[in-house]
Image (cartoon, rainbow, N blue to C red; front, side, top):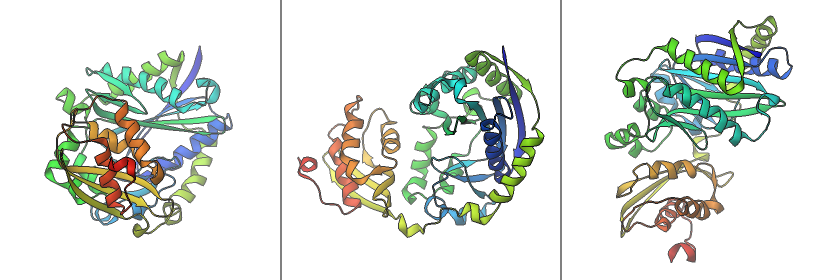
Length: 358
């Protein structure tokens, strides 16, 4: 049976954790170390995706006032808030360990295993495409992965406890999303182990369950270990580059290059407001938020729609919304899918097409 390694690098500032990401991935790519499961935690951090700009994605004044460090990941994806109340887990694998480069297939396999580990704590956790783990429709873990040559870094975040309001305030989002009603709504879509179990879960048990689940999934045995000398050397080089303003500002675009535009419209099904973070350079809807006075069931539909519209090219807006609603059963009374297209285009001051108007 193959032997893989477990590392626990403890609670660290974000620059150190990101530098370790690079060091471990480089070492795995060079085949200097075996495939590895790493556990990690962050001091309060606002983490940008590799291609994101801090001014466009984060409320930097709030971060500064609340001593939240800003850092850039080596992987893509969106900005997230991370602190001591979350446990991070990461797999550093070789392509032959997973037998494919299809990230959706990899996500499904790894998330199913992780969901088994979480369920063993006493909740019913399930994988939800594309890369979330949920309990009763509420997100408890987000994941993502990226290849570097033949090496794969797959990351997961488990919400042991969580401050949803702080997470929302860290991000650059419309004021409507920070109202008491909006925060309460966001809480309904996210769950922590502490809330679900009614007590603080045992971190040692969480680690043990995750280790056991991945041992079973990959047919391996894990052994506890430390960083190698090679990884230490790579880490020091990476940290000198990452723990700098130049790395954090690697992508630096002004906030007005991604304005948050808004429109509100009364439809037969109710009042619908759209707030759109719009990338003027690429003509892309980076994020869309819908609020207002309307009925939708299931309640999570709006959150799912917002997720589906992330990073949507403007010319794909209508087709994305139509595809979203065509694949699910949603009760919206008199509100129609075309109404969402209409209000977004109004926010962008875009002319309405005949197909939308009809």
